[in-house]
Image 1 (spheres, one colour):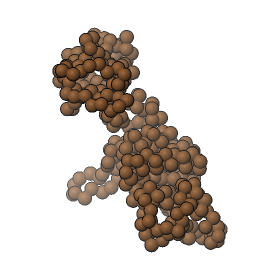
Image 2: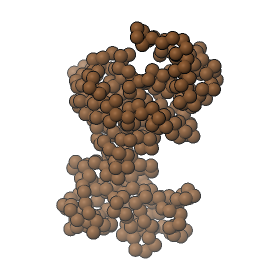
Image 3: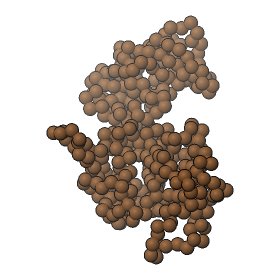
Image 4: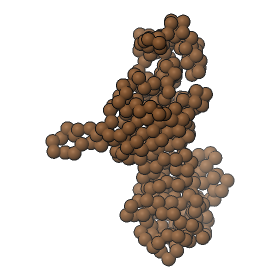
Length: 368
């Protein structure tokens, strides 16, 4: 089921007098291909959950249009859109068994869609089997782990055989190990069912790991749409570059002058294709190459953190926008830093992004 959002806008009246309306979603244009999993990603308050509520019909748009395939569902009530919704809080009925929770959406079907008790039980079992909880059908939610409760919520959403599946931060209540396991399950289920799925999260690692496409939002506006690796490798602006990546990108004050890229007073790259100007220079943590003597970037060493496969070198630089420069170095390439106060780096051109200080848009360049 292809989804199209055309010029979708949602305004909320401001509670303060003589203040403009709050625009939660602003001129939102997005086409979601059929059968794909899309990650809506952004910080808290960016409008991603509002966009999801507009999709499912819990909110009415102020302006714009929502299409499911060829059907305009903009004014269609939520119960008639054929949408499965999984909430952050699971929202299971504590007095019902797993089977009763899963079959609950089927109880309200009427007319030609009405099912017999046997049909409902069969469909509930099929949904439970898909999420691998078919052996827990007689338990109550209080007898389940957090991950199992989340699977019940997903099964309940799938039992209706929805055209579209919407997931609103479904992993935020789980511990780290369960988050990893459950997100892998969500991806497996989505691939098996081929249901067009929209996954809302503020966790960029979650979104990048399971999404076919990610949509990065800020203040109700789409900043960038693309495949996760493409967005990571070629961010359109400084916000996207800073939002994606763990550890986050290192941002320095710099300049382009006479074909050279400077970080502070250090000339770190020879470049072509960019005019002389003041810039922000972003270097991914994996973009540093530790050099004993020849590195052009001079940093003051703060400490070394051993992480097994990798080493995190923590340092500082006068041009750094933030407290520390964090670089990730392969343990095999580590040089002896004991008793050192200064470290020197070269930088990998493919991991360096340059942004205009005026517009914060990325400036393309070629390294010589």
